[in-house]
Image (cartoon, rainbow, N blue to C red; front, side):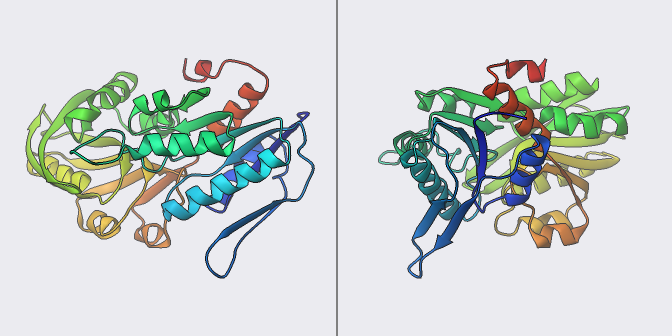
Length: 312
């Protein structure tokens, strides 16, 4: 279908990479990836990529440092094999929450990741639903920021006629308003006070949720403390049923157990991060694929077509 294009993948999310390659009607590029006994990462590109436009699909999810290092090593191997261009496709951008100094003498690690990718030889970056859109400014390279909202909306919109879209905090209002507008739904906001990292306390709800189905919308679910507290607050405020939707199922620590014990009916996520077996076993998660979104974006980038028109 294409000339001079190859799709490579790391081990972080091979099923998604295979689905993207299938959408593009291309085989995955052949590469050997392994770890030496001391844990060092090794990559051997096993086909000619000289002058080829290469796309490397690798979310930097758990284990974050291993997957990040694997991506950097693959990119370096491709650069030294004289690839024409190297596009890093990051369905999930790890360290995105460390996008600013929150205290004296702390790092801005999201910027460090940008520097590492640039130094390794990446010539373009594609990412899905960044935690902070400003991260694009950390790169001096072309950066395509994709949004999974259309994928999620196609699933949610036919199921709800009179729902309330709920932002779990003030920072997510813009995202939630965009969903509410497209679903012709009302908007509510959870007002919370965060006492320390990964611990949140729900204060009160702005908006009318009594007797309504509520959908909590966020970019990611990490420890699920915010999400589950919000779901309980909505139930206590009279919500009939509570659902959640997020792009990235990070699900660290006690997240899965919290969701199981919460009043959430269903949690809709995408496959930017592979869902753990424990999460699958709960029956509470619905996974949507972003393979078409990524595949279509790669196709348009390769042909120098508009990527932003995907969201018109």
